[in-house]
Length: 50
Image 1: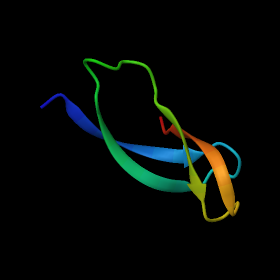
Image 2: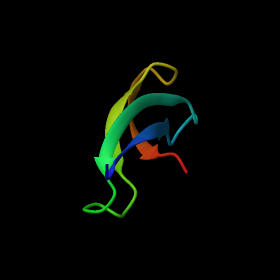
Image 3: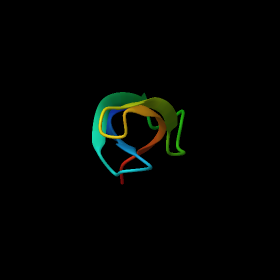
């Protein structure tokens, strides 16, 4: 299976809030999404954890 689980980490506080999947063959670059961070209490940029 080319789909793999990835963890999203808040770029402001470093909290790991979300888990998602992506196809690593089609999207080789790391994902970045804007999501709600409960620790920061606002929408922040979440980057894929290494």
